[in-house]
Image (cartoon, rainbow, N blue to C red; front, side, top):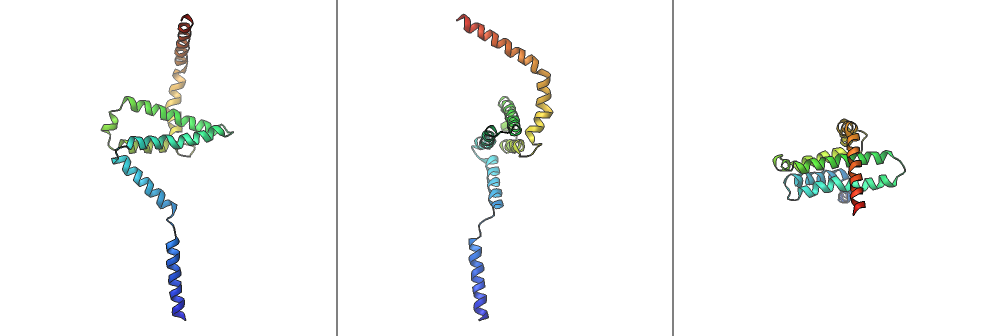
Length: 160
């Protein structure tokens, strides 16, 4: 009888092992590794990087707009300001994408750092250390230029 019990225990263990699914951490780690390899060597690495940098933040930004709190709105506006400035800098220094090895992987890591769900993520640090001081120093002159431009555009449109 003990042999039969032993065989049944082995069969039960094998059945349980077949039913065990991969833990989510393995699936996530594997997906991240595949994305990283593709960002290093893939032909459409720029597209993948921009999808990662836009899709999740856009989705969460819509949630932030629909929520009643202001804190999440500020967090995602800060991300979009940082993303926009980085995109403009990248456009005017496009040669960097060809010179820097694994540029799209580095950019993707940077964007993930900027969107981390922590209080002091990359976009918050960049905004408070770089963007905000520059904005506070120059916003009055920029506002004056914008107002003058609006007045001139209004005058042109009135005279037509």
